[in-house]
Length: 143
Image (cartoon, rainbow, N blue to C red; front, side, top):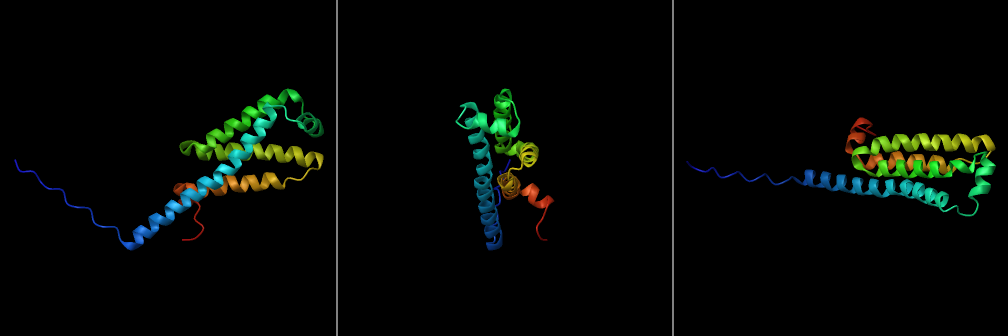
């Protein structure tokens, strides 16, 4: 029996190298952008779990019972965790979007601004768009 020698792979063209370099930069930028809303949710949950000053007044202002604090903190941490795992990131983004929608509705009801919620939503989906090529192919900015 004769052994066949495998053929060497062709060298990548300059265009392919540039494309993979751009892809890697997009993914890393997306990871960094995605980390910001996850960090904010983690910080919010930590504030709730440690009963930081102002939590009781804030919940009273929003019309929420303090009994909801641990549940909301768990929900925030769960959504952030699901979002940061690459295989479940789309589900996490949908869950965070729902969470932010509920938070916005609560703040609108009492007349508070919702700018931060909108920015976090944009960061959630923008970060996911940059780090997931499947989402970029599903929603192309240009062809």
